[in-house]
Image (tube, rainbow, N blue to C red; front, top):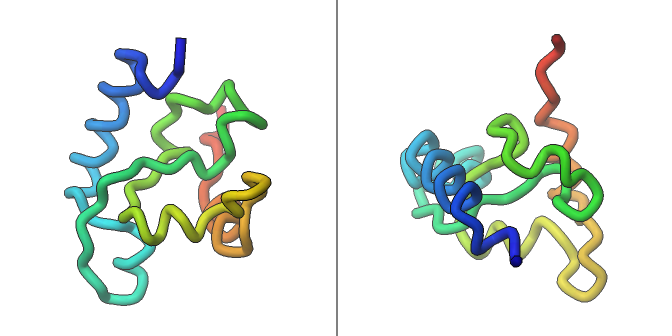
Length: 93
């Protein structure tokens, strides 16, 4: 089953969008208010499946900013994607 169609993902996605007040976190850095419609895994899902539902690893983005996070041809994080990956950190236990 596709992870992005699973019930746990849909619930978590909505929770993150609500938490970020449906505002793109990347646009917000520049004082712009754009509606977020995507939740991005800062540590990519394919590389870090164990972080797939961790709130600290998820940010709300508009589709324009989400497209800037990784190269769509090879799915490698861009410089901006690396910025956000470095910005989020797992909680220390």
